[in-house]
Picture 1: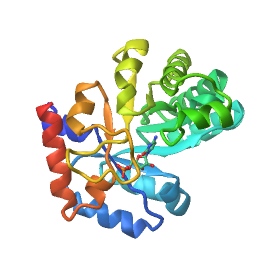
Picture 2 (picture 1 turned 60 degrees about the vertical axis):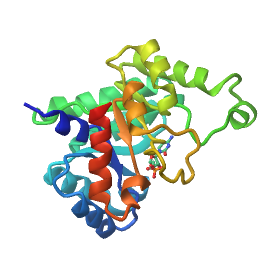
Picture 3 (picture 1 turned 180 degrees about the vertical axis):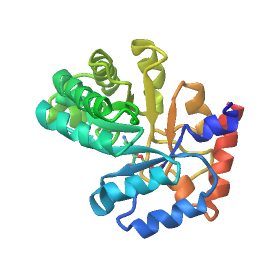
Length: 245
Ligand code: C5P
């Protein structure tokens, strides 16, 4: 039986945003014993590659490979197949690549699993509208009219129709996404700040407790943990707040 504490730790994602695998290992060591999810993004993956992902899996972590694929369906199908062979638990693609591209990601992952029965199908998550994109930029540069939230929900519906398992979104959008796509459709939410913590470059933030109450499935929490004096205690405090919520 998984305890509530373990379940909540497994919903906390720590971004390992380092170019040097030694720096990532140093952070992992500070968090020793906390069964959280590790998020490997472009910075670390392009530097340390598949070997580092395999190392995390060997250490027993769930891994989210945050490489945001966006290409023609055939290329994404092949990319998804290779990523799935690494044994990751989650990866993502851009919803703006369209339904056929998202379906291709699912097909590539399913092919890898069918060839290696020890593998499990990873959760495949769509990036909706990057939270760094303002309404003005979305309207005038990207050429999508309307509000950001409407676009995010439209992309979430498209991802669900393609058979994907969830989206990355702001915690502010979790409730609308769940209303549109159902409670099984996962929301992965960055932009989390404990009460009183520095905002850094995030603007529309929620506390861990608020995000859980809004229905976020996974909370991505970076600097409030990785830049803390005591990252382990900071992570434990956040897990406690998630349990209380
Ligand atoms: O340090 P902080 O908690 O702001 O880190 C958030 C993490 O989530 C970073 O790895 C960042 O790249 C990622 N992220 C984000 N906003 C998005 C998508 C990903 O902050 N929309």
